[in-house]
Amino acid sequence: MLDYLASSHGRDLGLGTVMRLPAMTANTARTFMGKVAHVPLRIVDPELWRIPDTGWPEATALKATAAAWPHLHTPPPAKVSARWVETVLNAQRDHGASVLLSATGWVSEVNAAVALRNALKWVEESRRQVGDAPMWVNLTLDSRWLSDRTLRNILLNEIVESNERDWYLRFYWPEVATRYGQLLDEAILAGYQALARECMLEDKRLYLPNSGLTGWFATALGANGFSTGQAWPEQAFARQKVIAIKRQGPPPAPIPRIFDSTVLHTMDHNEFVRIRPLAGHKDYATPYLDEIDIEGHSPEVAGLHYVAAVGNLTASLADKRPNAVAYRRARKGQAFVDSLSLTDRMSGINRPLHLPLWMPRLK
Picture 1: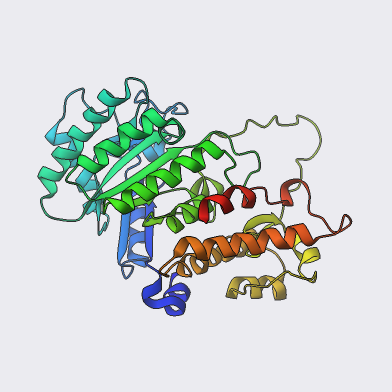
Picture 2: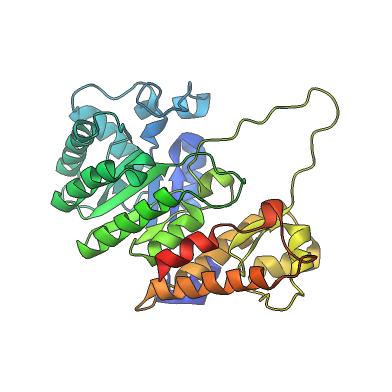
């Protein structure tokens, strides 16, 4: 799939891969990196926010695979430790990272200024050890750092005053109403807009891991990139909905999902098939969508189609006015939605609700 995107877009699309270290054994990690050694940007994410008792609200005891990594055994020391930082950096080096992430994890919004300054001390030690080699400031924060103006200004001030240019910021969203849907919180979207714009004006490079199409929206506004993936947790770092499991009867059948590039939304494949012939809908082909049309739906191929489609969307932002490009795509998608008759209208999980929230910010 990366080869397809590279050959399709060339210099218009920067490609990278992220390896989530706690999800892999050392052998699996080596095998994975062997397959992507040709990819220019390779990130080995230590996911330090997962360490219990370091602040992330959903942190639980680590599973055996994650606990096998030395840097996840215990919380980082109270004071900056050169040895602990070295362990985190070496875990990335040893598994093929082409750019290192600083040895930093969750940053609390409680006593925010102090918490952020303390995190940046770990960044300073990481930089001391890395020297001039590529390194990105790696912070994981609650979405209130975006939606709350005071918190956002604290963050922006540190970014602007720092000598570091590259910032890899993961934001923990509230629950997203529709699984595989889009973020609908206007205050958070406004925060992304402000953060992306300020970083662009200050010549800081902003990368937004696990942000899906919201990351694409932010990239159109000035961010330098984002990460997404086939699975829902790779598309959204968000609080998870608790679902009651029925004790009797068969479990509900999984929804066969597919991403529709016309309305920029993931929907039921059956609904996608229904709306494709309607006036105003446009097919944006990928090799994986072609395969689904011939062979039928499969979750794995649908996931590859999603990543390929988002890659195509991102390549389209290689323009002097990327916000205008994104605005036109959102406007066309909403125009199609608005054109549908009552009998043809999409509803429930299939209806895109984010486009009207995006358009005013993309103008």
